[in-house]
Length: 386
Image 1 (tube, rainbow, N blue to C red):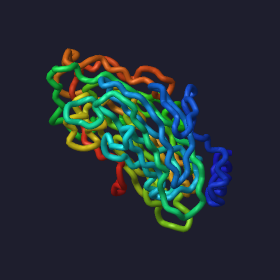
Image 2 (cartoon, rainbow, N blue to C red):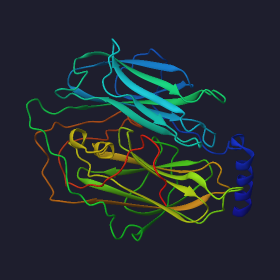
Image 3 (cartoon, helix red, strand yellow):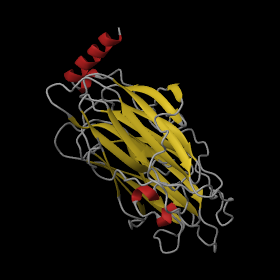
Image 4 (cartoon, helix red, strand yellow):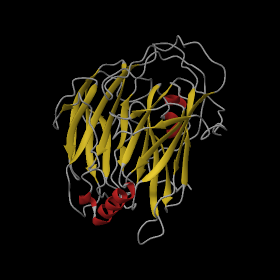
């Protein structure tokens, strides 16, 4: 029966994106509030709107002079649909007079299989940084891409989170250094945790922990998993894709398998890709230790993104042109290194709310064990990983 179902699904894939109604759409936060361009975002929370290529949407917000603010955008097209490699969003935060608060953030698909993609811009209260004054600011979201093809309206989900900054006059904490990039020897050999069904996005991501989890991806599908990371921990993630059917009419699908990681504020941490040939394939990524100081001292964007304690999100995607579902094993390990430390009295407690169901994801900014891993951030295309 399963083989019959796979054959029917494969026929649908070859028939085009219109054959994918069975793939569940991205599930927005249950408490998300619809907004329109020009609206005021009253405070931390989750908001929804739609956008199309070539369109600009803007949202106003009032910020005080004390809180760090992270504003994310998730672009969630219809799963299984075709997109262009440069389609996506450009995200920026500006003053009311139009001055930028930092670099513009590009969020792209970097492939032709639709999947949820996200990242954030921020206002951080630190000496020497722009946009330190209280007042009105504007979040600008632009739909970008090529002018060819059908222009579609797509759902965007805006996340607004805030945290307390460093205590005034306090000495800054130091970022961890010298961590190992080698995965634990037991990764992939740990206790099996059974079967898990990944969610459609950040709001319904399946909770997972250390060990090996089994799941299956259908063509064009992305699945999300939520794993908690404490201060000082580094996260190792390995996705082992089983043997599958070879792609029809070609030897391989470039970037046909994807493994991505997002932080609690929905910031892109790192991504790995590999060819889909139907042969068994492994993808591995490892993070730096989670540390507040990474936001100031992170040597790469990937290290800088490991700036929070809380729920991190693993995303797995299978190319829409794959002929049949692919079984997978997801191996997870969180490994602290160095000496454990008492909570740092220099830093205030930090609360990140407004993500998913609005629960507090980040609290008690202290330094716990210090751990780390290198990774690259998905700001552009990366080489395939075999």
